[in-house]
Image (cartoon, rainbow, N blue to C red):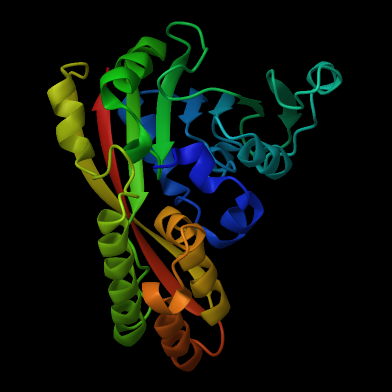
Length: 285
């Protein structure tokens, strides 16, 4: 079974264009819970920077930790950062921290993109007020990742693992077609041994069972975006299971993508509002 880096390699730009961005209100919730203003934030499994970017103007510093080089390349562009010259000369264009001031309304925010994993961030002790993991915790080895996250959190700091529900709420027919597609992908992933090694999103229970957090809770937030039939297909193609099955030789007909495209072409001929539900699991250090 390919790991997260291998599974998502090769289509970082397409992933970034299709995937939703977490709601901006999430930053307000996490700052309130952590009792901070202008916090130091670490985003683990940061991907293309979709989750890190929402902190512009809110956080003092944001460090995006991502193991995939191609994902980091897209994150650099999204966050307005430049390539590290020394790392480029060494033949690894993203080997070290890449840091730049990013103008934004509110608090001046400094971003950094670094190579690392949730299990081994490479960051110093107690360096973060808030640590986040967006659409990523099911790829973590929780037995190793949660102690590492606790290590880099300051006392009273907050860890938040959040995921959006699939599919977005559009209309009943489109939603039903996407659900059927998603069920088929999961069925084939399981049958072919392609599920993530730590599949499942019982993140709240995992946080509580770790004994590393003094209190845990879960809330939901709503995010509104826009999309048409083309974007819906791109969202489906951005899912790791879809990618893994197609690379393993499955056809779009077999995984139900053709049927989804047909429904979406009828129900989404033009751009319409989409509503994404985000589930946020939070633990206080």
